[in-house]
Length: 208
Image 1 (cartoon, rainbow, N blue to C red):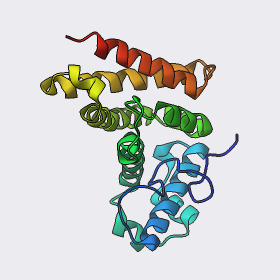
Image 2: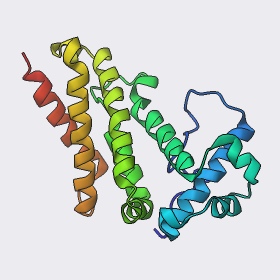
Image 3: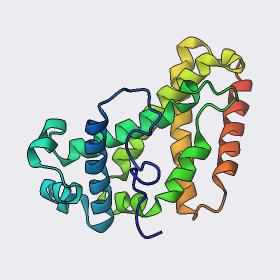
Image 4: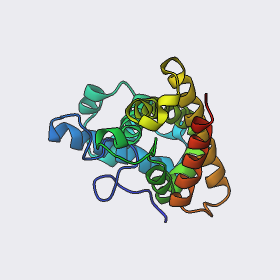
């Protein structure tokens, strides 16, 4: 795979999936998606610090005034795109009323990362991976906490400890993700999902 997926043609790298519950003017969404796509493509080509707003504008075919209507700078574009992606991904199970005992869409997250490996590598080379992972961990912690509140099996977790447990599990999840990428993704996303949830429920079921 030589290029990152383009959200307007395939599935999103960062940004709102079509099913995100926020209502937004389609023209605004398309503009924001074009800007995000342009930044993603540029990141695969050169370091983040070397990318200018003009580079993004040229790639997206968007005017400077339009860019600054939506974002303060390229960093704001980058982080906003990441925020939207992780918010949608981390809350997907709850939003769609998933009845399984999965606390997070691990298989979907890992499959997505596998599809955009060049982009992941570009984040590493640009020194932006840590920012993205910390952002993702925070969103998944909130998503896991929400799932716990919906699941009878999680009643063993005291409400005043739910956030702490969710935070720890989100940290474990992103540690597993980093391990998986570093070991060439030898296990399938489905296997990683099952492994993570075995760890989750072994811990939860053992709580008194």
